Length: 57
Image 1 (spheres, rainbow, N blue to C red):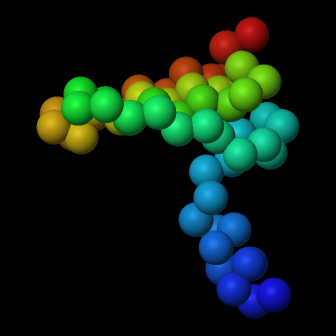
Image 2 (tube, rainbow, N blue to C red):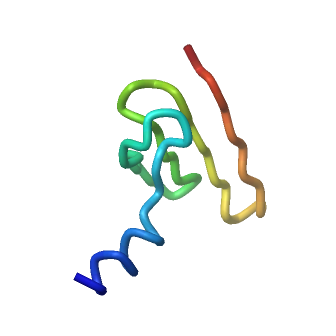
C-alpha cells in the first residue's frame, strides 16, 4: 500500500483530467500525451528542450 503511493508520485498525469499520460519515444524525442487530448509534452533530451502544449482542445 505504501509502495503504491510512492510510485504514484512518479507517474505522469494529465493536469486537467488526472488520467495517466501515454508515452511514445524514439531516437529524437519522447512524447507524453493525455488520451483525452488535453495535454501533450515533447522532450528533446539531446537538445535539453521540453515543449508543453496545454489545453489542446
